[in-house]
Amino acid sequence: MITLGIDPGFARCGYAFIEAKNSAYKIVDSGLIETFSNQNYNQRLSFIYTQLDELIKKYNPSNAAIEELFFSKNTKTAIKVAEARGVIILALTLNNIDFTEYKPKEVKSQITGNGNANKDAMMKMVNLFTGSNIIQDDTADAVAIALAHASRNRIFK
Image 1 (cartoon, one colour):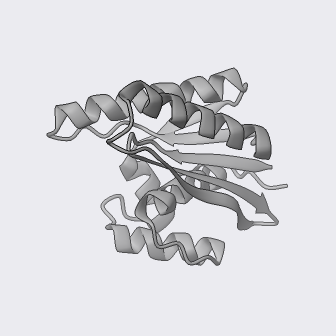
Image 2 (cartoon, rainbow, N blue to C red):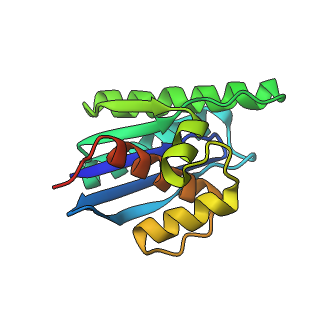
C-alpha cells in the first residue's frame, strides 16, 4: 500500500509517497511542488493542482494524510496556504483518495515522541525510519506526515 503525505504550501508544497512493508518504510517518491512569485496567482494554484494530480495518477496511493493549517501571524500567507490546501484537497477528492488531517504536534509526537520536537529531531527520525538522507524541510515534513499516518493506522502489506 502506498500512503501519500502532504505538507501544504503555496510557494513550496512538500509531498511524499511511502510504502510500508513488513514493518519497514520505503520512500517511493518525494519532493516539492514549487511555485514562484513572478507567476500569476491563479496559475500558481493551478500548477499545484495539476502537479499533484499527475503524481496521484502515477503512484495511485491508497490513502493520504495532510497537515492541518497552522495559523501564523502573517494572515496574507495563511490565506494563500489555505487556498493551496483547497486545491490539494480537491485533487485528493477528485481522485477518490481518503485523507486524514493531522496537527503538526500530532505528527511530531508520532515520529519523535515529543510534540514540541524541532526540525533537526524530525529530520533525524524521518531519515532513520526510511534509510534516506532528506535535507529539505518541506519534503521531510511530508514524509513525516505519511509515516505518522501509516504507523498510526498500521498500514502494512
